[in-house]
Amino acid sequence: MSSKRTVLITGANQGLGYELALKIGVNPAFHVILACRSETRGNEALEKLKAAGVQSASLLVVDITNPSSISAATEILTKDYPSGLDVLVNNAGVALGGTTLEDFQTVYSVNVFGAALMTEALTPLLKKSVEAGKADKKPAPQLLFLSSELGSLAKQSDPESTFYKTNYLAYNSSKAALNMLMVGYSKDLKESGVVVSGYDPGYVATALNGYSGPGEASKGIERLAELILEGDENTGKYYKWTGEELPW
Image (cartoon, rainbow, N blue to C red; front, top):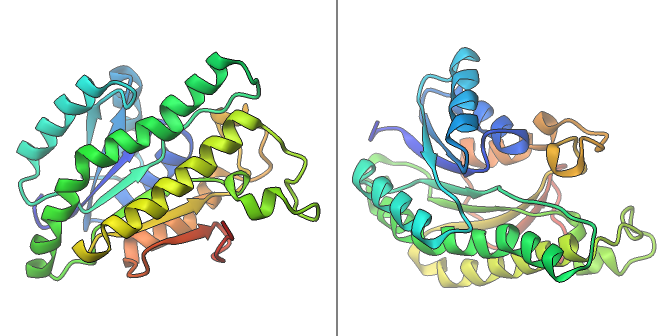
């Protein structure tokens, strides 16, 4: 397994995370780690992936809102992947339209705090893979954040923007905060050789939006899969599913 590039995807039992795991996992050069809160749903997703032709995949049970769970998961990863982790995809997310304290806490606990805690815990493994990757001639390790155009301050303040009137305060602000995390980590990790970027998959049908999106999750994740499969040397970028860069 050490010769393969290891890709950990949070929230990978359904939607965008699952589709990304499928697109990456069918490539024999990769091993995909499904990071899921539910062991039952994670195993179901794992079986579906194997039936679809994914040969190298595993399940990591972790609650990204629970520091103790993250610590236990990190110990497992450190032991099982001594050469480090090649790609971390912070994909897990929730969306609520309300503005109560509970709404904000629920959304931020996953979309912002969870992503930050996972990144802090697993950054040492990404750094470790930098040296291992040089020896194996692998692309630079990647730290990726699943964001949204709804988190772009430039787009949300532009009356001509497609989603100008989509004003979900908790969700939109959480994605703006996630973008700032991405910018911060891109600066902190620039000298280490870890490439950091954000990605907007577009408005696709997933459980997060009650399957109301007009696009398909498999389509929205295509460009992100390409960035992982081909490697990316451009750190600090905010990509859209169409391939263009989004303004902050």
